[in-house]
Length: 293
Image (tube, rainbow, N blue to C red):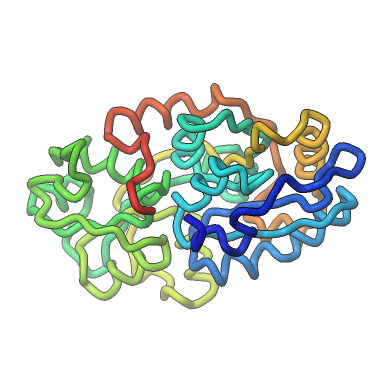
């Protein structure tokens, strides 16, 4: 735990407050792409938030999704960017407060798309085809909503018999692997290491735009709508500070900043908005973060 939280001062005491706002606002972000790229991507947002709130803002990107949950539970973060699944995992351990989510640039709603993808040259036309032949399937981080939870929903509905106690057992699929991130899943499918994988569709589109994945090299065989990533507050952050943080998101108008954050705008959310995520995570054995993360 201390190694994981080193970047945000493991063992440090309670920090001071200025006009109710922490003198240093500690913000955690899940690494839905590599942690180094994620930190660089959010630097303009860190600068915006610091200016808007008139306080120092410290960014923390964990090595995996569960690391951000651990940091919240350990009271090492004030605000965190979570997936729907990591949010319901966190709320099972501490009283985190959801604030806002992004309005997706592609759907124009607070929901985005999780996809099952195959190599463009593969014979598979559906998730059912991959399951029926006992193919190899890759998820991203085990605690990813669009890279783990909803792809698991899709393969179960396609006939896989996933073991709630063993997340790597989903017969008749011959193997289940966890790549750690959406970009790694894309590469696993491209290389032929697996027959199909679960990925966040807008991240795939971004990888294509960046040239990391050739456009059209991966083919989408199924999608599912997912409630957007919530920004949440620690229960220890006071109500006025929570409102100030939420208002800072709702006030973003800079197109470049919104584009960096994959958002058209922001909308307020509540715990009720994640009822389906909570239900599916419970049914599939993903409500509790994996041990040792």
